[in-house]
Amino acid sequence: MKNKFGKILLLGKKDSHGLSWLIIGLLVWWSGLAGRDLYLVPVLVGILIMAYNILRNNSFKNIFANSETIMSWATRRTLLWLLFFHGIVLAATAVFKLYSFQWNIWDVGIYSDIIFNTSKGKFYSSYNLTHNWGDHFTPSMSVLSIFYWFYPSSNWMTLSKVLALIISPLMIWKICDNVFAEKKHVYYVGLALSMFWLFFYAPIVNSSYFAFHPSSLAAPAILYSFLCLQKKEWWKMILVFIFLIGLKEHLASVLIGFGLYMILNTQQKKGGFIFVILGISAIVVIMWVIMPFYRNYAPAWTTGNIENISLFNDVPGKSIYLAKLLIPFGFLPIIYWKYGIIAGPAIGVNLLATDKNLYSTSFHYDDLTAPLLFISTILCLNRIIASDFINKYGKKRLFHGLAILWLTFVFALLPASPMRILWKSIPSTTDREILSELQKIDSMSEGKRIAVQSNIGPLFQREKLQWYLQNEGQPCGMVSHIYSIRSIPVEYVVLVPLLGAYGISDMNLCMKDLSMDSQARKVTGFDHLVVYKRINDIKPTN
Image 1 (cartoon, rainbow, N blue to C red):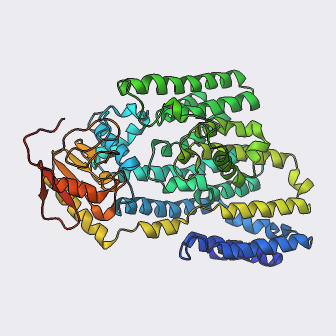
Image 2: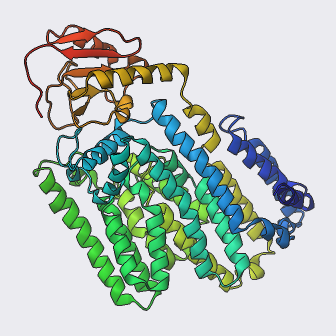
Image 3: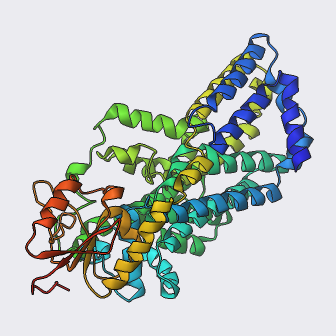
C-alpha cells in the first residue's frame, strides 16, 4: 500500500509537483495538527503550479497518465480499509463527545430519552411531556430501543449514525457498478465520490460531526432505494420508503424526488406519478393530522408553523447555500436537471425554511439532499462519459482553467478535519471528575424527578427527566422551565456551572435564585456539581 501511494505522489513530477502539493495539503488538513486553515498553503502552491502549466499550454493530462497505477490503488479493498479506519475515528469521536459534554439535550438527550422510554414500552418524551410523535414523526427510530434493553446509553444512538455514514460509500460504489459500463469508471467515480462523502463534501461531513437526528440514519436507505429502482425491485423499494417516512415527517420528499425522476427518465411514468402523490399526501397527513393529534392539537413547537415557511426570505443566504451544495459537483445536477430533479424536493424543504440553520450546510439538515445529489452526480457523469465529452473538450485550455477553478472552490469549502475534531473531543481530567459526580447523583436520585442542564442531559437515562431551561423573563428556581410547554415540580436540580449551559441565559442568576428558594436545600458533597433538593411536601407530577 505504501509503495502504491508513493507512485501516485510521484505522478505529480510530470506536472511540476502540482498534484503532490495538493496531496500534501490534504494530509495536512486531515491530520488537523497544523490548525484550521494552514493546509491551504500547500494547496495554493499546487493550484498555482497547475495554473502556470495551463498558461504554458502544458495541461495536467500527465497527472493521470499512469492509469494502471491509480486503478491498482482504487479498489474495493482499499475502500473497505478506508471505511474501517475512518469508522474507528468517527466512533471514537462520538463516544468521547458524550463524556466531554459536547452533546446536548437538543438533540442527543431528547432522542435518547425517547428511545429509552420506547424500550420501556412508552412512546413518550420526558422533556416535552407528551407523546414523542407530537414533535417529530419518528416511529422507525424505535428499532434502536432494542439496544437500550441491554444497556441504556446515548452511545447506541450516535454510533448508529456513524454506521449509517460509513456503509453509505459501499452503496455509492454499488450504484456506480450498476450505472457505468466500464470497470475503470466504476473505480474512478466510486472511489472519488466515496472520498467526497467521507472527507470533502461539507454538507454530509458537517452532519457527521453534528450530534444526532433521526434523519441521520436515512442516507444508506435512500441509496439502497435507488438500487431497488435500478433493479425494479418495487416491494423492497416500498418497504424502504415506509422506513424512511417513519424517520421524520419531511422524508416523504425523497419519495416525491424519486417520482419526478421516474417521470422524466424512465418508462415507469405511472409509478412516478403515484410516488409523487403518495409523497405529498404523506407530508400533509403526518404534519397536519397525525402530529397535531399526538400533541393534543397544541401549536407546534418545532415544525408545521406556517409563519416559518417562506421561499423568498433571505434570498442571498439561500443562494449561497445552493452554491455550497452544488459547487463540489460542478453544478452537474443543474446542467443535467432531469437527473438533478431527484434531489429537488429535499432541497426545496430547506429553501422554504426561515430558520437559517436549515440552509447553512453546517448541521444535519442535508442528510437527505446529500445522498440524492450523489445519486444524480453519478448519473450525470455517466451521461458525460457516454457523450465522449472528455475526448472532445478535455484538451482545451478553457476546460483546464475551469477544472482549476473548481479545485480551488472544493479546497476552500473543505470542512473541519476529522482528526482535529477527534483531538478536541477527548475528555479532560476535569471531565472525568464531573462524570464520577454525575454517577453519584444519578444513584442518589434514583426514582426521583430531576431537572438537568443541557450538556449533561444525554448522560441520564430515566423516565422522570426534565430540561432545566430558563424562559425569557422568568426567574430560575426549583420549578424547571420546560421547552415552551409547561412546568412541573422536580425533586432535584443538577447543574454544572463550569460547563456553561445552552438554554440558561444567566447561570449566576439561576444560582442566586436557587440559593434563595425557600423550597430548596443545597446538597453537599460535590466539587463540580451544584445540586438542590426540594424540601417541601409538594409531590412531583408523574
